[in-house]
Amino acid sequence: QVQLVESGGGLVQAGGSLSLSCAASGTIFRVDVMDWYRQAPGKQRELVAQLRSSGSTNYADSVSGRFTISRDNAKNTVYLHMNSLRPEDTGVYYCNVIGYSTYSRRFDSWGQGTQVTVSS
Image 1: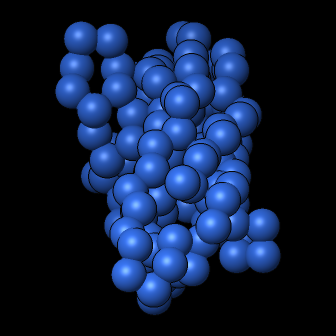
Image 2: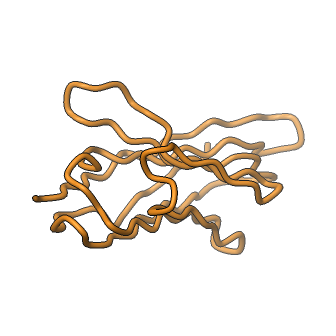
């Protein structure tokens, strides 16, 4: 069982910055993908940023150039650094980690979500 604990959400003015973190705990053999999703009120959950074990990254067009996903392998933690925030970035942000807890046991875990509110 791999659990994810998120932190770092809050209220920020437009143009400001905020960083989120997501720490994974439990038995982890290998991490393949670390993602950040967000869900705005009345909208579907969308992928914001993705970081693969190869180091390759992928960003939603709406956040490209403003958000950066990174990780600390020693701490099994993934971060999302958000700059130039806009009111439309408001939502609940979830981290998602996919990997293996043993050689053959795959996991796909989600964080509890953290609220990010950007005021205009």
